[in-house]
Image (cartoon, rainbow, N blue to C red; front, side):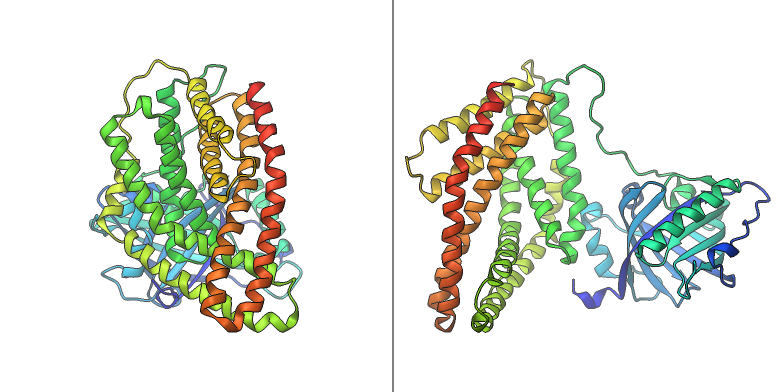
Length: 487
């Protein structure tokens, strides 16, 4: 997918209300209300037969009557108090077949399932812009009369009032809160943050796995179910951001979810079917190999841009040439990654991670954490007095596995251990980033002789970072040892 496939996009913030019968909007003059405008909007929503998009809080529709015919994909971002926050992406195109670019963005949910119209909504919409004390509209109040049909038959009719942000300015957020309070005071019932289509079809998004409450500790099987469910949900949730390619953090969180799932496969091995575990372990290794180069390049770009600020101005041109080469390498890695994410192998992997094959186990969670700790401690004891780079890398891998095991278990003692291991992982991660950066800079100094001086200066900074991490890691390790012993 390219940027040209999306006409435009933004983040939508809105609060939804169910007004009582014969409700009249209160006077909004003090909020700088403009002239009301009424339009009729016709929208056809598309989903698969199981309504998997809607169950994930996603809607894909074609609508006319509001700035021309267009496709809109809405993806949940978060729920912020009374506000429903969604990413809204607009695609040009006539009614009929949904745009391929939009379908690609939700592939992780569909996995080859066909899309078809599931409902049609006709909305008589009255808009009232609110300007506050200024001239530019900040918030919009929307009064909708909705009639819905499915298969040509009427299925629902209702009225809904919305308050939506038109800008991210803080004054707009304050105005939205004041208008929400006014509508509630006037008798409106603040609805749960869900799309209109949920009211029509009744397919509410599922709730994420909730931690156990009370004093009872979960069994190993229960903890495994929750750990796998969280990681599988994170993979699917960050898939869209990976495909859009706008925020490196999406790739990072996607990779973390895959790594955490792989780590949990090791931690919870006693409660998993062996053949299923081996298969998923291998497939997640394949996925990590597709995503890893993109994330490594993201980290390297951010690192070198930050460090380059300390170089003399005369090296700026050479630094930009180095970064151009690095970004080109990342672009090629991204294309390979996207090719993998558009294949049936990836679809089957997502099916597998959402359906772990569990067996019974009578052991305790703390025993699994202790097992991972012993493996980590054994690697640390086996390191040289002056550990080689590869030895630090092995410690980092074991630290990560032990941390994930502690996070999957319950109890404050495991939480404290996990935080200590996270600090150790950060130090070792910085060391590994410096090692990879140094290796890349060495190769670029040979490939681009005109950049050798700038590459050498940046390389010296990596050595300084490695030296710092080698000093800090011992203290971080001792802190982790302390928290393990006092569990």
